[in-house]
Image 1 (cartoon, helix red, strand yellow):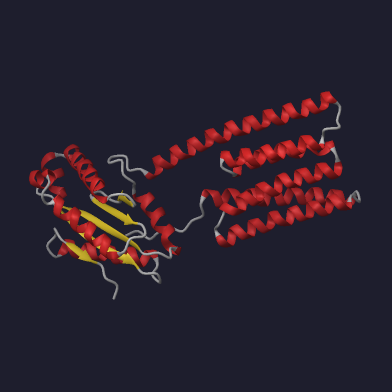
Image 2 (cartoon, rainbow, N blue to C red):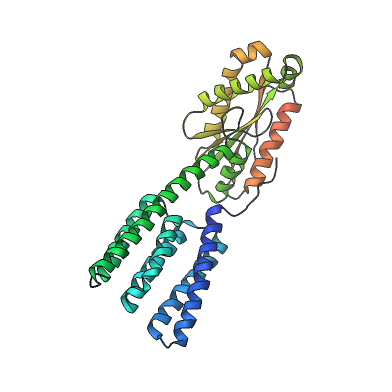
Length: 322
């Protein structure tokens, strides 16, 4: 089985990029303010810049981007409010990148709450401005906020759609190998028991050879639907190769997974797919040990499936760690 790649998520890259960019540009303003002897605001800018740098390093080392995203969004709006309070309405321009940052980093509902409260505080700080100027600022901030909300909502929809396409097997509609690798790699730090099943279709090649690939595709769809109906909630089915499938049983022990394998195996031997095409299932079951890497766990499973195929097919092998 292909070794799992441990690469950074899009969220990590985004948070690191924004925090570093924020740190660099706020540092530039801190230097300018120091040169102008604006000591209080310069100190605030330096604190904000150092915080942005801290977030960058934290995400780099821990690969945890969820809380830092909220931290960067919060520090951005607080910095905007503090600068406005200290320097007056001339600093309103900081509100526009702040609103974009908030909606870019946070889920829409959370972004609306944070920015809605922040916008009210900002307008309160500007309450003594001439009426027309205050209305102008309120309208422009409102329009910018609305555009950011619409853009964020559309991006969320597009991201969800692309993620579904990227993780879905086109033929069968179940999850694909990419999704399997991603989900399995997430279990590297799991403190609960995790189990997996590998399934290979015996004699599937003869379907393609005798009936053609169109019929073979139809059989794969039927097998996927059959297994999907048997696995129940809390488990996920993946097509990870031509006629090879995997099931992840999240938070389930070996006994549960083995009984699930027996249920699928026995039912499949009685189904119409078996009767029509003489297809059977070779299967392997393994529980991930707490001190075992994901790669070693899946390699053990792969070896057990190979053993099932080589020792007669149509059987379940327990991939026990020795």
